[in-house]
Length: 426
Length: 152
Image 1 (tube, helix red, strand yellow):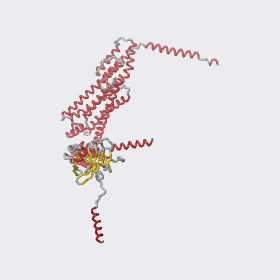
Image 2 (cartoon, one colour; image 1 turned 90 degrees about the vertical axis):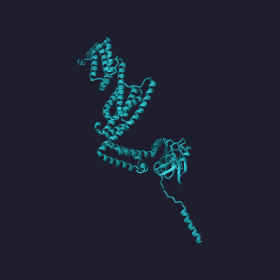
Image 3 (tube, one colour; image 1 turned 180 degrees about the vertical axis):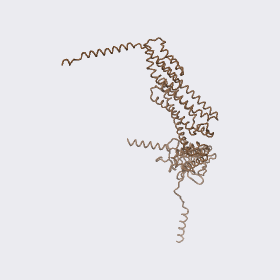
Image 4 (cartoon, chains in turn orange, yellow; image 1 turned 45 degrees about the horizontal axis):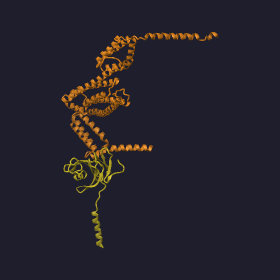
């Protein structure tokens, strides 16, 4: 058995190495030559310290990529081989740096940022692919669930794999959003100054990098993915609140970035319109999450059996909810004390403590959908409702307590009297 | 008798002068294949190895078409012993040639893909030539055919 396992492992390793070796030597050398040519051009056209740092990072990346193929390239890359080609690139860059008066310490700092930028960019691409695949799987599974249960998927669907996938996808989308803005920040940090203080050549360099890393495209993609996620999942409660938070965070990060991009795109009208497109897309996404949030809250009241008039924004929510509470306080329907007590207990235990006070009111305040004062008003009204309740069964409770105390006293006296008087006998 | 000895001695000298001179060992291996585009006249040209070759006959043998030749990218590699291995996309065979006066002479024709090669790649794996066709397992070749022993 052990021998079989060993043989299988060996076979697997051999197969892996066989597959790993199945690449074209010609293609490797061609790629090396293309990269060398491209870096040479970049060095020759470098005009800023950032351009030099980028070329420096490209040479490092090239050395890392082709390290294992050094022997092959040394033989096949005629006439320079590998070592001489890299040496020539480094020398050429040094000369260019001297011509531009670039200080070595600047290069080191900006090169470090460039490495970070490339890593972030790779991670964005990787996460995009991962999210695409997850999105397709969630869609497929949701359709299957729909066919089986006749209902669309929501967070309470008792299918663990689907729920886990959904959580993973949500995390993936959030992570990707964060990465895009981190990437953008790093791009601006390389220049270490406001866009207004940049020279034209620096602006062009930064613009080229923003285009190369597809910043605007990635931001648009994120918005669309988040919208698609919202549409396909029909989340509720705290899950939905998380999505609203995510949208607000995205909106605020974009608001921070947009003015810098606008200054950069001053010259190009078509590019500048891209910023307006993102603004519109964000507004649509914001409207969708808000709509989903109010729908979810309306449904919550209905499902728990409380007749609060439908609302579509924070002010309507406060007005209608307070109107409902006022009705209860004033006992408009002239209900008996017992009925009122039951209704209040049901509201308090099934809705107020579990959802409204615990999740929704803090979230709505945090998301600036209602003000602190409005939240306070609701809480005051709720307490007034509590105070207005005259529980019909209270007198019974008091009688039972008195009876209980009397019973304990009688039993105590009886035990005391029945106790044998051993001391007197003795 | 003397004349006989002289004749024998002269014969030795003449035979020694006529015997072939062999230079060994030699290494003719190209580190990577050359991918050469066939021009409208059926010629390929390698600047790196400084040679020109007309391949019309080869294309006709493989495809039965020597007219539409200009779209073909021929892949050529030379093994350690100096044999040329030539193939291209849509070829079923790898052709092994040896150098002859003013050209190449067919040494062997190795069938490697019954349905034709999709993305053939030739790699130098001394002492073999490796042919990779897309995701298919790699095949090792010698001038005599497919190497059936251990595969790299």
